[in-house]
Length: 275
Image 1 (spheres, rainbow, N blue to C red):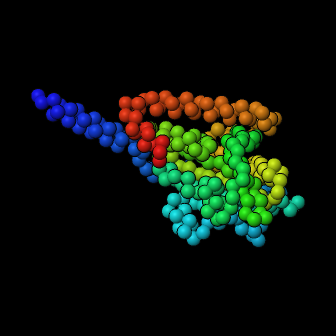
Image 2: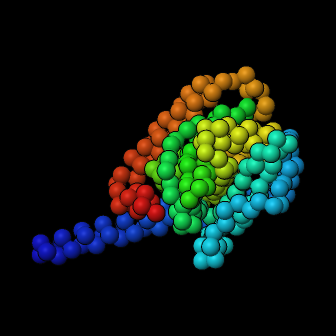
Image 3: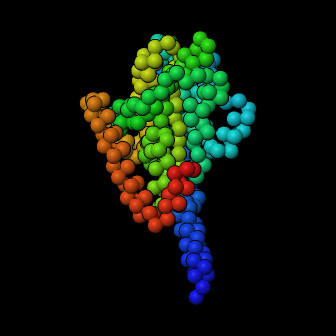
């Protein structure tokens, strides 16, 4: 047989196999299960602890072009400002998408705030300790003229809270290899003030108070399935950080195994990582 013909046949078979594998690994949307149906407006109380909605302050909202794009990406969004008896105000924004073959990237605060003219002057990874589970978060400081806005946010992909960037992509890759389409949520809280650490402390208190009044199912929607009943009140921040690091290492090992399983077609894994 002609050598060039053999090479052509081999290449053709390889391309067909890759195409078939890509199709097999492409996650397929599914109808939401009954327990997955919820309404953000109803899920997050208008009043909890010392916090009540302040209708006079509107959280940062996207411009009309961004808003139209977000309406195509997300199934639900929630934006509120809460105030306590001491005059502290916290802006809460939640975006939920039931199909995370669509990316949360467009609504990350780093993008949203900059698009509104803010400058990002600080960005750090952190762990928000709660009584239910440590939450991996990103801490930001956005500035526009005299307005200084400390921000805390996190995302969930499927049933896990995770950081943005490579961890977010790896979780989506793991779901893709299993043929599932995960849902996703972005939760953002922010305050206005010149002392970021003081702002983040207020935000942490707000998040803790909010989680305390939610039933376990709704709490798990916000911070992941690792959320436990309120039996961790004595857990300190150091233990929470260690638990978060252990969970991240566990996730990385699991995803590494999944990627090795797909090593016969590395182009497929690469495609998922670049989504």
